[in-house]
Image (cartoon, rainbow, N blue to C red; front, side):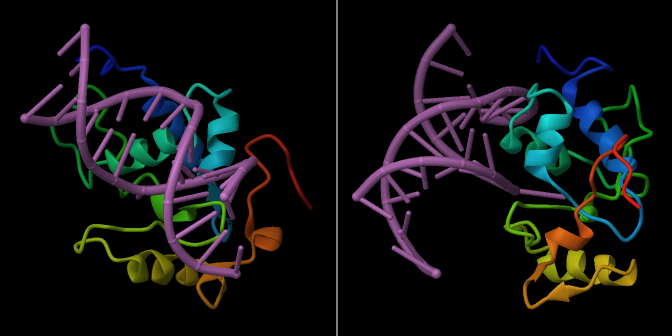
Length: 126
DNA sequence: TCGTTGACTATTT
DNA sequence: GAAATAGCCAACG
């Protein structure tokens, strides 16, 4: 490995995701832009995929990032839908459930990005 | 070091 | 509009 330093782009993604306010959602592409294209949308997805439920050995250097601190469920794809979820232990229904609990109303299978899409960490919408 | 895979997006067919 | 293709970056074997 050559990139698991305590300051990898993965942590940049985590920090941004943690800044997402409750009741809002964010997209992979938007995060990719926020980190100045250092990571593509696919890379962002990977970062969240690598996000451990709890501190494992992947990032013992900075065990502050995990499912309990990073609202990964607020990160969705450009279509406003939840992730494709290939893992049976992490069904998309669960992600939708968590978002609805935070005030994000799902229209059929996707959320209204025009309403729930977070504008960014510094851009403030009223 | 190379090849494959994956929680993506945009473009083309 | 849906399916296929290409581009993208990082981790794993």
